[in-house]
Image (tube, rainbow, N blue to C red; front, side, top):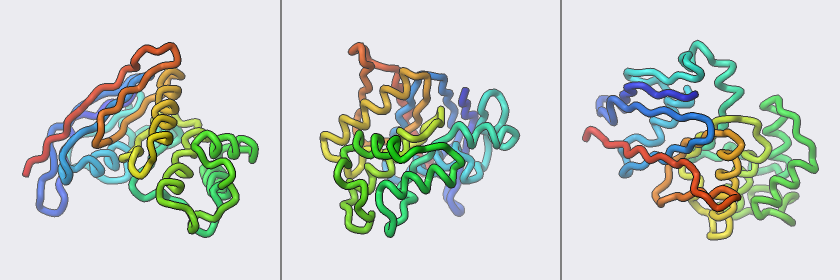
Length: 212
């Protein structure tokens, strides 16, 4: 459903990577590995259509994401290093505002359940500016539970999370895959996803090699 073909990228006059190809089907995850500075974030942004590629193409349902832009955007949830949260709003208000801007239906009870599942019960009405970095990241990740997107693209989603939150996020990713979703993510640590029946899920690995 997602196909990346022969992508190349440069930053300024410096080539980062070339000839990157992979594919994702429903129920699959791909763990993008690589040393710092090889261009993992740049690759994710290209896949999401947020940055241009020097060469190659990204296809969704056998059409380029440029030719299939509306369908691709409606199927995509991207979480980068910037969490896109408003510091003056509460965790609950951030979720409700994000849903409204995205045109998704989200009730307050649904938003509260999502925040509770990410370990934020009792903190739903706190403004983001008084939260820790880990709590802010969990607020951002709670949007996954409110998302109807099929493809999740996550840049270092486990950063700043404690052990309990890491386990919770692993469970959330596993649930998404078992429901036919797809996940493309970066992480500096190995990630094993286990289904509710105890069997490991399909997590592929792609190691990005820089050209420097």
